[in-house]
Image (cartoon, rainbow, N blue to C red; front, side, top):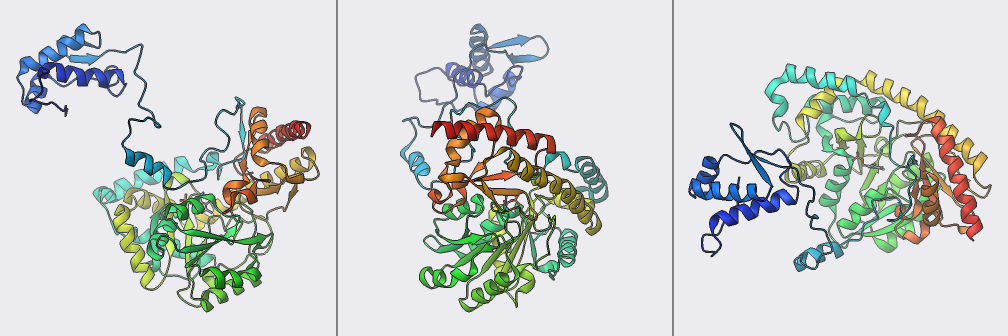
Length: 488
Ligand code: PMP
């Protein structure tokens, strides 16, 4: 144990040791039943006599903080009163800590306001996929199999670009979706969030402009804000980004990157039309702007015609395609990937190395054993069947319980229904009442560059709740609407 002691101080060494341990016990960082180091060992580690350590332990014992047990050493005793943990906002923090907080304003992580009364059985329409559908048992088996099969190799760093057989499987899955690529153009990342971050690092510097759909994924907005980038929103409608309005924005703002989620967008659920896809590729080419295509749930289609990925329309090197196993399998895997060609690919590999060296080899190997192209598609089919029913249940419940002025476009796939509230009602104010009534959703402001633009929108995730809970959740939401109307 490393205890800081100061031999120059007037305070005797045994008291310094006792004071440090006392603080650790009372703050809870040394938990009850923890065994303190043997006196001989601690004396040796700290370069003090054994008597000094024994005196320190005796002082703690007389304070009732530890007990000596014959044959098993000195143990921490449970304490009734623990010291409060040092909290933020204290004036004792060095100045730079306060500057760290001021640097960038992110959207709030929590969905509601602090101090909201929250119903004990909250039905949440936030989140992404349904954890009850995670293939836990099969994945456990895959992990065991791979440890037996590959032994120590599972615990090494492995190829910086990602485990080659997993890259090959991803290339096959993508080929089945009409994206032709080679495993050497795939870089495995820690979730697709890291792919977005690496691309931002590779291509952008503070003050550069990124063009995004308005609204768009809040985690991307926050990422770009963290890089001190300027954000320009291009309006979107039921068919995705209004690419017809793009050209003047490109001429005026000279963005260095266009970020788009063409399929079942987060948060709007919209799908970019084919004509707009072609036009977007053409504009990106004409204005020499890289396109970042985030295809986080492209496979979760419930009806309608499939659209080609932008990557599939790319005449060469214009589109960086980002995908993930988070939404269809399990977000905790933290496995995403980027497909890119040309010098940018090598740059991304270098940045991956300097950021975190590699994504867990064990998890990549386990995933490779678990996932085959056939299994992937079976999972997509199963999730689509379940989620389609839930989408229908949500839409039906909205029609039944919510006021007619609530406007939505039924999404053809994905995870979200995006709804506009009647008469400029505030989704944030409604949320406070909704949480008290036992239901929550993601209020719209966080998905906009200018948060005020999103005040009367809400995003409802239908994938995480059962059909019964969806009905009950929307019924509760209806109550909150009534209350809010009465307050106005
Ligand atoms: N893109 C979109 C549109 C998302 O909604 C998310 C997360 N929810 C991500 C990327 C990042 O997900 P992950 O890192 O788990 O792949």
